[in-house]
Structures are given as structure tokens and as C-alpha cells.
Image (cartoon, rainbow, N blue to C red; front, side, top):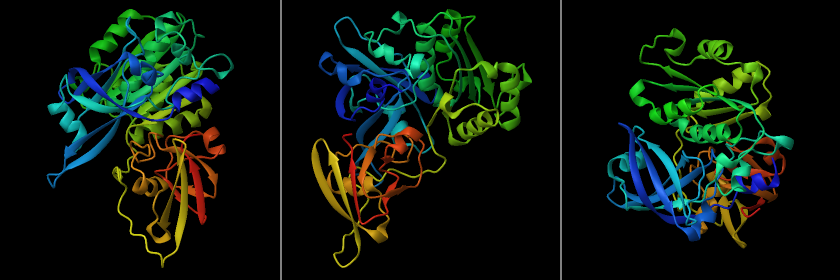
Amino acid sequence: MTTETQTASRRRASFHNLTVSEVRRLTDDAIEVTFAVPVELAGQYDYLPGQYVALRTSLPGADGELHEVRRSYSICAEPRTFGDGSSEIRVAIKKDLGGIFSTWANAELKAGDTLDVMSPQGAFISRHGKDGASVQHNVMNSMNHPEELAGEPGNFVAIAAGSGITPVIAIARTLLAANPETTFDLIYANKAAMDVMFLEELADLKDKYPTRLALHHVLSREQRIAPLMTGRIDSEKLQALLSSAIHAEDVDEWFLCGPFELVQLCRDTLAARGVEPEHVRFELFTTGRPDRPEGNAGRPVVEDESQETYKITFKLDGLTGDVASPTHARESILNAALRVRPDVPFACAGGVCGTCRAKVVTGTVTMDENYALEQDELDKGYVLTCQAHPTSEEVTVDFDV
């Protein structure tokens, strides 16, 4: 991964208030939301296909009081800049059972509303190309016009389920436009045809690249003509799909996006087939462990001078902060930092998105989960502060690195 790509995919997270320019219904329980990005902020919202943004607003809770809510959503369109220098960000929001934000957005969000939108983040991007450089990184250097690219050709496969199509469709559009010899296979799992997000867009993409894009729709609750495309993707079906639907041995890069169980099944299956981990990109929408974000102020922790504490020091935006964390509380570094500085960056607080990433400068920590950082980042001392807990008396982390 080049230094430029790392910078683009791990830029310092910051929120700006953006206006919703359009809300488009995708399915009965999913919408596409377009945010207008003014000229003066266009540089803050350059992105690589596959990245995500966090959205922030305040919604009434069960107590009737307003509470801050943050949710992350992948960007579903390839980058582009308009003639006047402005741009846009498009995300798809699927209503989740019990999801406060997604339910509100599907029912209430409309053009003209404003939300806080974080600058794009994430490492679910292609790295295929000469010397490991990302083909998609060139999008940033061509004024966000992927059709002007002449990237290295490759054979790509994506396996997505439900709203996992959101980043994948942006990646597919960009890679197919980058080189006339590139091929892309997409295995897309849904319950039924009515649940398929971007159905028309995928059909249009197939019409545009009839010989280079292969679509394999798998429906778990709806009968299809081909038995292989009917039913839930389990280990047996996945093996059959890899053996017959695509040429698995010729794949340069794999993209996996969906629920934890499916992504993990695919990773394990590909590993058993001898696919090297560096050729597999994955992103989770949930971990299968429904830990809730601890809120913008951190969960309450009572400090008692008579009890043992960890001293946590953190650097953010050039400023240094300190906070004492009781050892018995087993508090995450993120939670402790939020108690004294509410602008510490985070989005999912579940170890999935990577927004809260920081580098351990001194001391030691342990992480509960990690679904966002890659091995080279771990080797350099980076951690997810939402999952990191001190294991030494003093710990210093740097969010600015």
C-alpha cells in the first residue's frame, strides 16, 4: 500500500454539516441519500471507492430527551467532481430491525435536511496494480473521473449480502471503467428479489459490460431456475459457487462484505483453498456481537482516588489530554478519552470501522476485537481505541499519527 493510499484511506476524521440533496427509495426498507458537498469542502470529501462515512445527528430516546446517534454507511457511488468544483456523497441506508437511526432515516429524512457527515474513512479498497499501488488511488489524481483511468487489468470477485452491496457496486464500477480487460464477478445474496438493492443499477452495469461483468444473484427465500442460486449460502453452496460459477484460480483480488458469519465463512473457505490473505479485502456491517456505542460522552465511570487507576494520555489535533481510568472498570481507551474530550473520533465503537484508530506511543494494551486493522498496521503499533484496554500503569496513544 502506498503512502498516498494510506493517507487517503486513513485521513483524520472530521465532521461537517452537509445538506441532503436527494432521498431515493431503493427497496421497501432501503433508501439512497445524496449529500451535496460545496466547493469549499470538496477536498475534505475526496474518497476511494469502498470507503464509508459516519453520519451524526440527535434523536429522541425512550426518555424523550435528545441523544446523539452515530452510524457508519458505505459510499455507494464512484467518485466524481462537477464542473463548478463541488461534489457529492451518496450512501444507502437499509432499515434494521430495532435500528434507531436507520428507521428514522427511512421514515423521516428528506431533501433539505442537514446532517453531520464525517470525512470518508476506511481501507476496504482495491490494492491491485503495479508495485501494490491501488488502481483506485489513481481516481484521486484524475479529478475523480474514473472513466479516464488506464489501470492495470485484473480479475476480481466480490461476495456480498444485503446492504453489503453498497461499497461493492462503487468498487465494481470503478475497476471496470479503469481498464477494458478487467473482469468482475459478483455473488450477491438476498432473501428475495424485492430485497435486492441497486437492482436496476446492477442490470445497467451488466448491459454496459456484458462480457466482463458476471452477476450471480442468490436468493435464500425465493425459488430460482438454477438450484445453485436458491437457498442460503452455507459451506457446501459456497464451495459449489466457487467451483462452477467463477474461475476461482484466476482471481487477483477478492472483496467480501456482509454479516459476520458470511464474511468469516468466505475467509475460511478461501484460506483453505490457498488464497493468500493479502488478496482478500473484507468489511463487516455487524460483528455478530451487538455491542452498542457508549455514547458521545463515554459511559459513566466514577473515579476514586483511593482505588488503583491507569493513567491514559492521548494526543488529538496537536493537543494532549490525560484521564485516570479505574482498573476495576475495564474501560476502553476510547471511553476514557470521551469522558474528558467529546470530539475524539469514533463511529461504530464495535471494532469494525476503524475510525477510532490510534498509535500506542508508550505502554501496552490489549484489544478485545479487531475487524478493521490489517497486520502491517498492528505491527506498527496501531490499535482500535474502542477495543483497547490498558495493561500497563501508563499508556499514551496518538490519534494524529
